[in-house]
Image (cartoon, rainbow, N blue to C red; front, side, top):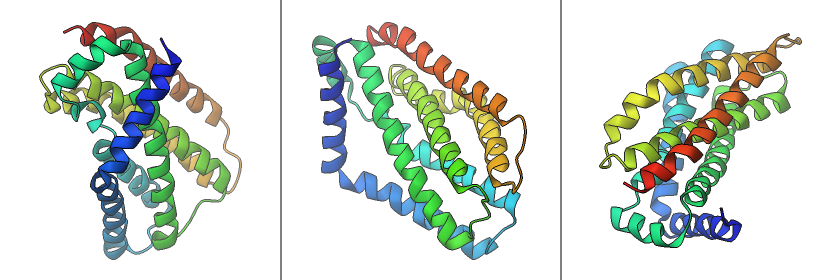
Length: 218
């Protein structure tokens, strides 16, 4: 893996995102409209409902902003990249860019939730850390699925089929971790959930690094 290629690919994705601002602002508009619609329908919900709505919103933001990372690349570009860079560099560049993008969207979403739906969180720093780790987890999952779908004739349905068994346990663990951050008193056992979540993220990235070079050659 060449780190110069890695940084160049990340810079390329940032440049494309900046030139196609309608995609970025479209996601921001989606987040704002979603939170505002929730506010109109439920006002300021109770703590568990607030937490569930936050993570459901995070899921749809991830699908709209991260899942397109590989699917938006034309197959002719893949042939060009194949002659220029190592597949692991290409995969990790997409992964890093997706993680950064989704962390930013997560913070924006949390700010809007706090402004419109109230802020029932007692340990704000811990909740921000959980939401950031959750963004990294969702970004890892959907980048991995996007890589598989892009090499399977751009089959987005495959990503939906594979995404359900992967995204569901991640969301359940993140919801439970977030509830421990929302609680006013210390909740034991949170580190076990955090450890399982980190291991799952490492496993997904490891599988992507191993499998993507084989998909790359197809």
